[in-house]
Amino acid sequence: MARKPGSRSDITGPRIRTAARRLFARHGFAAVSMRQIAAEVGVQAGALYLYTPDKETMLVELLRDHMDELIAAWDAAEPQGGPVDRLEAFVRFHIAFNLDHAEAVFLSYMELRNLGPGNFAVIEGLRREYENRLEAILKAGQDAGHFAVPDTKLATMAIIAMLNGVNTWYREGGRLNRAAVGGIYWDMVRKAVAA
Image 1: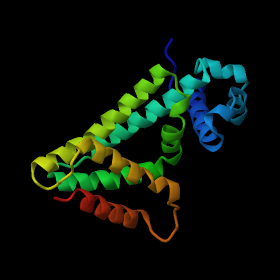
Image 2: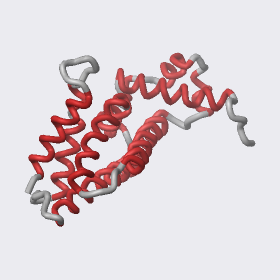
Image 3: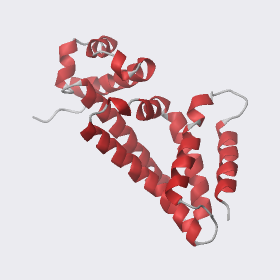
């Protein structure tokens, strides 16, 4: 049976996902019960099972949705042009996207340990898919003589780790705005890979 747009299910499902993401990010996946998620949304705990078979499925769906959104947003934003311009765009995009999705990013890195092997493989595959986009830029820059990195896979992981670190310290209204942070990080990445 098809659900009508705006039906109670269309409203409650997103509210459950939002509450779960917030609670998992704040307290940790293992510490949050289905009962707490239900209370946050204002439904009976049993009602959650209309939307998800279990808590791990809820977590993997949150992680998968985040990675799907990240990949789609980059694919839509990736500029044409040379590898230097594309690498700069990647650095600035990654920082901005992560700051806009701080809870989802936190879950993506802190809660992988709570996934079973099959779910872990799904999320890890999506992460590799995203990382491959950066590695392709680095390889193109290497081939064009713009970049000099001894191992593009290792450079990819190092760059993403550095960019992800912004979420651990950046605060809106602080000494540096997002544009300034993006510029400084771009300068550091550029120097790290320059030929």
